[in-house]
Length: 301
Ligand code: MF3
Ligand code: CO
Image (cartoon, rainbow, N blue to C red; front, side, top):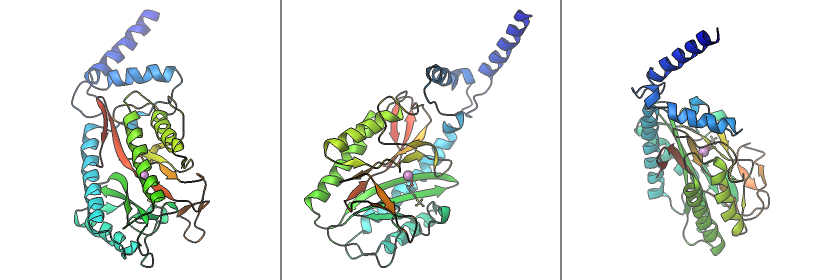
């Protein structure tokens, strides 16, 4: 009885091993995702959080998402070229809408859960989700985050940059510089078979060392097949904790760094924009990354 049962199990296993891999690579499972999934099982048995199969992008999906990310970068480059003092954030919105649609894309924020514009423009004490407006005029000394997200052929990409206008204060300059360093250090700490917490710890430690804080309740996210997928990506969790970084995962590194308190309030009129609770400055830079067997690839540079 036992032997018969064992034989059946082995046969099923054997069949799966030789079946074409679920990822559509055309390779046999045993030559493709089997090793990755066996390694994931070891981590899962230790009680670690491992991604579900649907969070591992297939080669075809990766190709399509990269096309979306390339358009997203082109849109950000267009903003970078045209942003200037005296311009309204509404004009940034128009650039984003026009460049995206001209290339066959759709701005992901537009009508997303009621968001009224194509891009988020967050200035000075605005942490994120600033809404473009014809009456909001960029002025000398402003620091502004422009957060662009694109849908191309149904595939999503997401990235943001900080822009500084004219001569900015030393304190603003320092915050923007350290935010860039935080993201680079987070990226350097990201390794296949490491954990999301490794990235968070690198970011949080560097921010803290400069007397800054990292926003806790708004974070990054998986991305690609949807705008916001699992996992939620925190930038304040300890090293070695949170989800295992498995080849094929895609997510954003987008810490929001505050001069003062990490706390915020949401605009009572538009229900979107997050402001620092103490009116301190806030900066953010967002990369979209892919975990690969040989390292981490930034898809939005
Ligand atoms: N990149 C931002 C995010 O990941 C974009 C938000 S767009 C909005 O949350 F529509 F939700 F505002
Ligand atoms: Co994002």
